[in-house]
Length: 193
Image 1 (cartoon, rainbow, N blue to C red):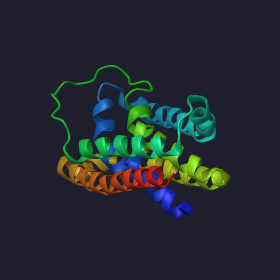
Image 2 (image 1 turned 30 degrees about the horizontal axis):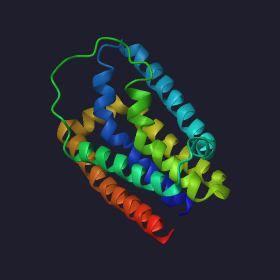
Image 3 (image 1 turned 135 degrees about the horizontal axis):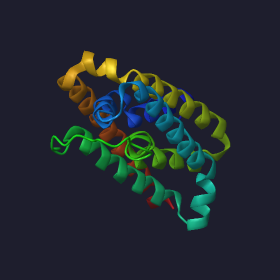
């Protein structure tokens, strides 16, 4: 996998356009003058989490004695479940969030969620000698996500609810295909060894 493919994969999983509505809803109780600061803080926290997983992933796998096949299969399952939630979102009440979000739910799991973390672990464990490539892909995907989410209020006004829902479902369909491929790769690798 090259840098562009990894960037697109990570960007699809981070789903910045699909997260616009969630960010706007989560920030309703935050004074308008603080919203950009809160979004920026959550983006930085998410980046720290992602970088930690990128650089400590192989060590963590070794510590837990996990094989690459288990990582592919579990990553594919997690990604598949996240994709299903994107395609078929659960119904939510009209409860308004009044507290300022901190780390949860914006930094994690909305940006640095389990599917992104599993994907980083798969990339680093599959091609450990290309960490700089994965770092570049992660920083580009995070940068695009940051730009989109910092503009979340304006984008939400343009896309409206139906547009945001359509984008999120399209990203969900793409993630289902990636998840199935990860599962197939894990099963194939297991059967060969």
